[in-house]
Image 1 (cartoon, one colour):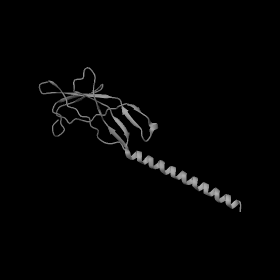
Image 2 (cartoon, one colour):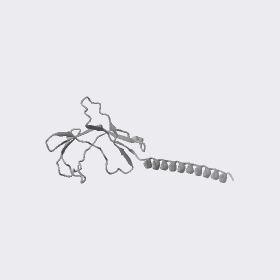
Image 3 (cartoon, rainbow, N blue to C red):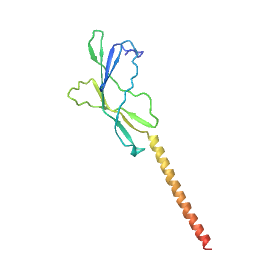
Image 4 (cartoon, rainbow, N blue to C red):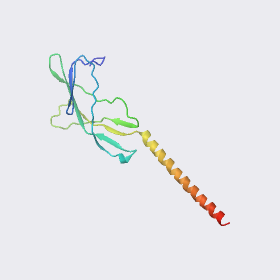
Length: 150
């Protein structure tokens, strides 16, 4: 890719069983890929976290002489999901045919610290309100008891 984001060579990228082809002398367009969530428990809110299935990405490009070369790849996420943190840890590919040109990764998604803190603040406020109501109820019962026995 040159400095303007234009591909210098025809490029083929494989994302698991999805094949993407990009033409030389063109700006590489974005491609939407869907991943399945393989683990996570929403009942653990706000401490829930989720993981995608493991996926593999490999790429090759064709030089001007028609020879194939492995493409250097980097996975990056652009954008954000409000109140979530998203990471892409690279995993070691231990398959027998690993030739060093394939990235193996998964996506980890978990709640941001601010979401966890906000949830804990709301929980504490609710507990303090219950405590206050309990104290008010006990004080009211005591006053009514004394007024009744006068």
